[in-house]
Image (cartoon, rainbow, N blue to C red; front, side, top):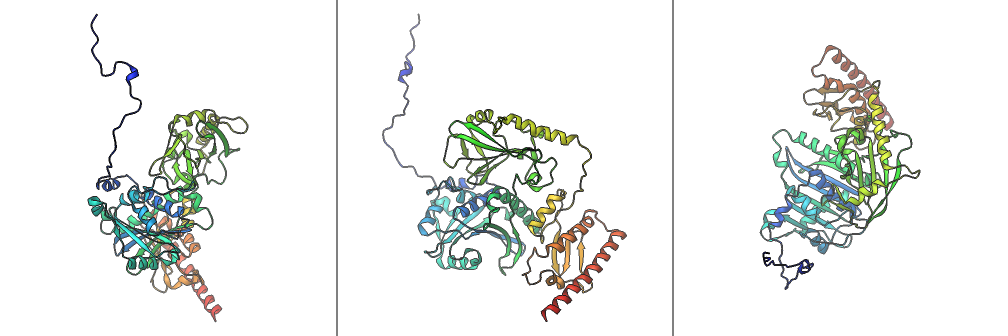
Length: 520
């Protein structure tokens, strides 16, 4: 026999289950830690949503996202709210890298990293200015260049803090917060003459993201999010859009009788978890179905934490996405208390689950004993039945409406009419036109110009805004859209527009005459 070699540990009994220590030392983060915050991978829309989460936690009723424009340049972005605000000490904590505060069970904030990581992922400078009912305006600023040297955070001049609060007193009132981004890296990529296109595409994506992920808040009375484009010098609003909720379960009639249906899953470590299962109507044109991303990615679980959507579709490893499950969407509200089964990603764009969730799904049942597997079979059958039908009328794809159209009207038009991809939206503008012209169009730029001499006739005593006269604009959009889609003019279409121009001009003049008579 060979003698056994001496081993460091001769038997399993020598294993140390706890690592022994001989003291401790403090190792603060290196200043380069701030640089790591600029590489967190936050999408632009998700970053803005994270800032608005903070506004909601601060009990804000009104939030405004403002793009500041100087001629053809975008210079800054602000998120303004009328929440409870912060005093000096609270602002220091909020701006501290790694700073922590106590979160209530209802708070949307979770890790204390959102403000810094979301902001510095997109901007070279983050400024936060705030005031409470009982404390004056105060501010702090992070410049990534300085922070990378020694964690230096600037104290903003109190006079400037008050000036900025006064500038937006229509939102803030007695209390609130302004988050300002400067040196936004995406703004530096805009080529000459492309600012309008960049803004329109960016705001469209932001509207959709906020409308979806915060739809439960936006559906409540008294909470509003507005997106504006502001001339930084004149303060004129160049665009103003109210964000509308996009309910991922907002169909008018379910795709299958008996739905939605609630299933209860016994999940170890959580208890009874309710799953509200929906079957969308097949081939729905609604934005809430088709306009929030590829259908295969939007089937599955819609997971909420404190009414904030934190995952919009996906099966969390319980099955693969298949086209025949495109109509299946399930709402899940996470328990407010932390647990070991569900954990949010830092960016709140997904949920990690343990195998306990899959085991609970296997045992999930509705009130009649139906299983979750049976639900999926019913959703699949609904999809397959619809695919076999060939008599359904298909509406033609159209160029979507753009700036100058009220968001509610725009949403309805996009629900009812499938949009042509990659086309510049149709803009409506009031401009100076000859007295004998009510409207004209620019086919190349996709613009409908309206004679501003008649603007008041369609606004009565209301203040005119960029999205005014919705009835007029809806009618003109339906009448004129084909002229942009079909390219070059034709004698027939030109004659149609001449007819419409003549009739609308006479109608507008009648409205103006009636208005003048009523004023006398």
